[in-house]
View 1 (cartoon, rainbow, N blue to C red):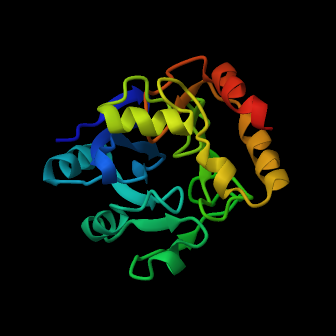
View 2 (view 1 turned 180 degrees about the vertical axis):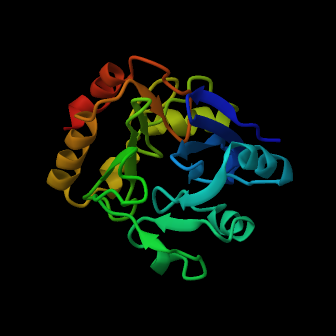
Length: 228
């Protein structure tokens, strides 16, 4: 059963184990931010059962559900059904990929007015197969990414270790080699990532792996520097 863990003021996360083909296992993380007016911003929803829904309700009203790229949408539909009043934000192309999903607004490099006072965001361009949107929570100086970086320090099972080794992300904060395969416009990708690295952050939250509680700026520069 997933439980919310407090990471900073108005910032929480919860994890859910995911089993992939071939026996690969890793956790995926949902990030929750409380905005002014006790509105909750929910990034990359995981399965939300009655218990987790009750935890969220204690914090505020689920107002925004965010799919941050074209892969982190597995539980978005169920979340939007559980919270029908929440507005659903998704990256470019997700509506075409999964027409059955309710999507109220398409994300871009421009931060929506709904959370512009709290967040800055960047669209990682040049990789249309991913369309990842990265968020900076200004009050806590937290960078929230999905698949731009992995930090799985203790992989679970042989298959997971093999896959992470192949992707260059085993046991460390790193960019997956997958990005080299899916990036179509390398100049656009590098420019976008330079903008991400230039943001003012100290903490890093990613979908897969250990949260970097402090000192994340230097570590992200080290992980992404060779590619930009």
